[in-house]
View 1 (cartoon, helix red, strand yellow):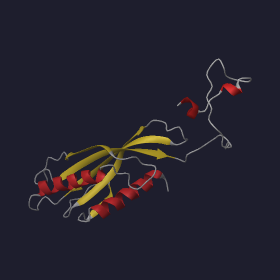
View 2 (tube, rainbow, N blue to C red):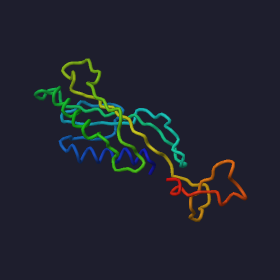
View 3 (tube, rainbow, N blue to C red):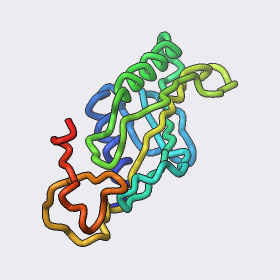
View 4 (spheres, rainbow, N blue to C red):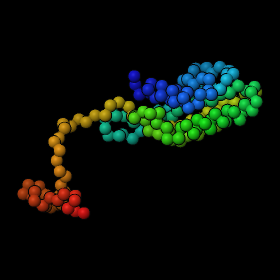
Length: 173
Protein backbone atom coordinates (compact mmCIF):
# COMPACT_ATOMS: atom_id res chain seq x y z
CA UNK A 1 0.00 0.00 0.00
CA UNK A 2 1.46 3.38 -0.92
CA UNK A 3 1.53 6.49 1.25
CA UNK A 4 -1.42 8.25 -0.43
CA UNK A 5 -3.65 5.19 0.02
CA UNK A 6 -2.59 4.96 3.67
CA UNK A 7 -3.33 8.67 4.11
CA UNK A 8 -6.80 8.32 2.56
CA UNK A 9 -7.63 5.35 4.80
CA UNK A 10 -6.33 7.15 7.91
CA UNK A 11 -8.33 10.30 7.14
CA UNK A 12 -11.49 8.26 6.65
CA UNK A 13 -11.14 6.26 9.86
CA UNK A 14 -10.11 9.27 11.98
CA UNK A 15 -13.03 11.40 10.81
CA UNK A 16 -15.52 8.54 11.25
CA UNK A 17 -14.33 8.08 14.82
CA UNK A 18 -14.24 11.80 15.70
CA UNK A 19 -17.49 12.76 13.95
CA UNK A 20 -19.86 9.78 14.37
CA UNK A 21 -22.93 11.88 13.49
CA UNK A 22 -21.78 11.89 9.85
CA UNK A 23 -23.64 9.14 8.03
CA UNK A 24 -21.07 9.00 5.23
CA UNK A 25 -17.34 9.65 5.18
CA UNK A 26 -15.75 8.63 1.91
CA UNK A 27 -13.52 9.62 -0.95
CA UNK A 28 -15.03 12.19 -3.26
CA UNK A 29 -17.03 10.39 -5.98
CA UNK A 30 -17.22 11.65 -9.55
CA UNK A 31 -20.80 12.82 -9.01
CA UNK A 32 -22.21 13.99 -5.70
CA UNK A 33 -25.73 12.79 -5.14
CA UNK A 34 -28.37 14.66 -3.20
CA UNK A 35 -27.94 13.75 0.44
CA UNK A 36 -30.58 13.35 3.09
CA UNK A 37 -28.14 12.93 5.98
CA UNK A 38 -24.90 14.65 7.01
CA UNK A 39 -22.05 13.48 4.80
CA UNK A 40 -18.39 14.26 4.19
CA UNK A 41 -16.57 13.59 0.93
CA UNK A 42 -12.86 14.29 0.59
CA UNK A 43 -10.06 14.13 -1.96
CA UNK A 44 -6.48 15.13 -2.59
CA UNK A 45 -6.88 18.01 -5.02
CA UNK A 46 -3.28 19.03 -5.61
CA UNK A 47 0.34 17.98 -5.17
CA UNK A 48 3.30 20.35 -5.22
CA UNK A 49 6.94 19.48 -4.75
CA UNK A 50 8.16 20.14 -1.22
CA UNK A 51 11.65 20.73 0.14
CA UNK A 52 14.01 17.76 -0.22
CA UNK A 53 14.34 16.19 3.25
CA UNK A 54 17.80 14.88 2.30
CA UNK A 55 17.09 11.34 3.46
CA UNK A 56 16.19 9.66 0.18
CA UNK A 57 12.46 10.34 0.40
CA UNK A 58 10.49 12.81 -1.73
CA UNK A 59 8.42 15.50 -0.09
CA UNK A 60 5.15 16.71 -1.57
CA UNK A 61 2.79 19.34 -0.29
CA UNK A 62 -0.68 17.93 -0.71
CA UNK A 63 -3.79 20.07 -0.89
CA UNK A 64 -6.85 18.26 0.43
CA UNK A 65 -10.49 19.18 0.24
CA UNK A 66 -13.49 17.95 2.17
CA UNK A 67 -17.07 18.69 1.22
CA UNK A 68 -19.58 18.61 4.06
CA UNK A 69 -23.22 18.31 3.06
CA UNK A 70 -26.49 18.37 4.93
CA UNK A 71 -30.06 17.95 3.75
CA UNK A 72 -31.32 21.34 2.58
CA UNK A 73 -34.75 20.59 4.04
CA UNK A 74 -33.70 20.26 7.70
CA UNK A 75 -34.18 23.11 10.12
CA UNK A 76 -31.33 25.60 9.94
CA UNK A 77 -29.51 23.57 7.29
CA UNK A 78 -26.95 26.32 6.51
CA UNK A 79 -26.04 26.58 10.21
CA UNK A 80 -25.76 22.80 10.53
CA UNK A 81 -23.37 22.71 7.54
CA UNK A 82 -21.26 25.50 9.08
CA UNK A 83 -21.15 23.64 12.42
CA UNK A 84 -19.84 20.51 10.67
CA UNK A 85 -17.17 22.59 8.91
CA UNK A 86 -16.11 24.10 12.25
CA UNK A 87 -15.89 20.63 13.81
CA UNK A 88 -13.66 19.45 10.98
CA UNK A 89 -11.44 22.52 11.35
CA UNK A 90 -11.04 21.68 15.03
CA UNK A 91 -10.15 18.07 14.16
CA UNK A 92 -7.54 19.24 11.63
CA UNK A 93 -5.58 21.23 14.23
CA UNK A 94 -2.06 19.67 14.20
CA UNK A 95 -3.57 16.54 12.62
CA UNK A 96 -1.09 13.97 11.32
CA UNK A 97 -3.57 11.06 11.08
CA UNK A 98 -1.24 8.89 13.22
CA UNK A 99 1.12 8.52 10.26
CA UNK A 100 4.85 9.06 10.65
CA UNK A 101 5.28 10.29 7.06
CA UNK A 102 2.73 13.12 7.33
CA UNK A 103 3.25 16.52 8.96
CA UNK A 104 0.46 18.43 10.68
CA UNK A 105 -2.29 20.10 8.68
CA UNK A 106 -1.69 23.75 7.74
CA UNK A 107 -3.46 26.50 5.78
CA UNK A 108 -6.88 25.28 6.92
CA UNK A 109 -9.84 27.24 5.55
CA UNK A 110 -13.57 26.74 5.09
CA UNK A 111 -16.33 28.42 3.14
CA UNK A 112 -19.71 27.62 1.66
CA UNK A 113 -19.50 25.76 -1.64
CA UNK A 114 -20.23 27.72 -4.77
CA UNK A 115 -23.80 26.60 -5.21
CA UNK A 116 -26.39 28.72 -6.95
CA UNK A 117 -29.45 26.52 -6.90
CA UNK A 118 -32.06 26.90 -4.18
CA UNK A 119 -32.89 25.43 -1.68
CA UNK A 120 -29.41 23.87 -1.39
CA UNK A 121 -27.78 27.28 -0.97
CA UNK A 122 -25.07 27.10 1.70
CA UNK A 123 -25.91 23.56 2.81
CA UNK A 124 -22.53 22.40 1.53
CA UNK A 125 -19.24 23.68 2.92
CA UNK A 126 -15.76 23.13 1.54
CA UNK A 127 -12.85 22.74 3.96
CA UNK A 128 -9.36 22.86 2.45
CA UNK A 129 -5.98 22.20 4.05
CA UNK A 130 -2.41 21.35 3.17
CA UNK A 131 -0.06 18.69 4.51
CA UNK A 132 3.52 17.73 3.81
CA UNK A 133 3.79 14.05 2.89
CA UNK A 134 7.06 12.14 2.62
CA UNK A 135 7.04 9.45 -0.07
CA UNK A 136 9.38 6.47 -0.26
CA UNK A 137 11.82 4.98 2.21
CA UNK A 138 14.64 6.73 4.00
CA UNK A 139 18.01 5.83 2.56
CA UNK A 140 21.53 6.01 3.94
CA UNK A 141 23.88 5.29 1.01
CA UNK A 142 27.05 5.41 3.13
CA UNK A 143 28.43 2.42 5.01
CA UNK A 144 27.88 2.42 8.75
CA UNK A 145 30.84 3.93 10.53
CA UNK A 146 32.07 2.88 13.94
CA UNK A 147 31.26 5.33 16.71
CA UNK A 148 33.86 8.00 17.24
CA UNK A 149 34.45 11.28 18.98
CA UNK A 150 33.90 14.64 17.37
CA UNK A 151 36.98 16.87 17.38
CA UNK A 152 37.45 20.28 15.85
CA UNK A 153 40.51 21.79 14.22
CA UNK A 154 41.10 25.38 13.20
CA UNK A 155 42.99 26.39 10.09
CA UNK A 156 45.90 26.49 9.52
CA UNK A 157 46.57 23.96 12.31
CA UNK A 158 44.72 21.03 10.70
CA UNK A 159 45.64 17.86 8.88
CA UNK A 160 48.51 15.39 9.34
CA UNK A 161 50.97 16.48 11.99
CA UNK A 162 48.41 18.64 13.83
CA UNK A 163 46.36 15.88 15.46
CA UNK A 164 47.29 17.20 18.91
CA UNK A 165 45.84 20.62 18.06
CA UNK A 166 42.29 19.32 17.65
CA UNK A 167 39.82 20.00 20.50
CA UNK A 168 36.58 18.40 21.62
CA UNK A 169 33.45 20.60 21.75
CA UNK A 170 33.55 20.34 25.56
CA UNK A 171 37.03 21.92 25.62
CA UNK A 172 35.68 24.96 23.76
CA UNK A 173 32.93 25.67 26.29
